[in-house]
Length: 123
Image (cartoon, rainbow, N blue to C red; front, side, top):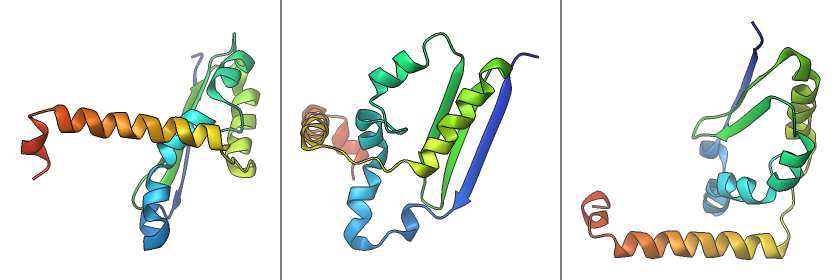
């Protein structure tokens, strides 16, 4: 009784991106997690939404882009403002953010190479 669910989707995803941009776009989720999907860093967004029950998660798949969320009826306006930011805000990472993401990716790859089980999953 005290929950509002919203979702939306659009056709087109990574399959619509050209070969030159595919690898960059496939890292969009990781980049968004560090830079912030709504134009604010995740830490700042957490402060802005403190005390509110709002959760919106976007997703980028092979053939479509989606978002879904849940919020209390009292926080519906905040949720719709976040959806508005998804469509209108141009998120541009700064070089420091890109260095952090590249470091995270390098650590992930190093971890995979140290894992003996990875050999069985990558062939």
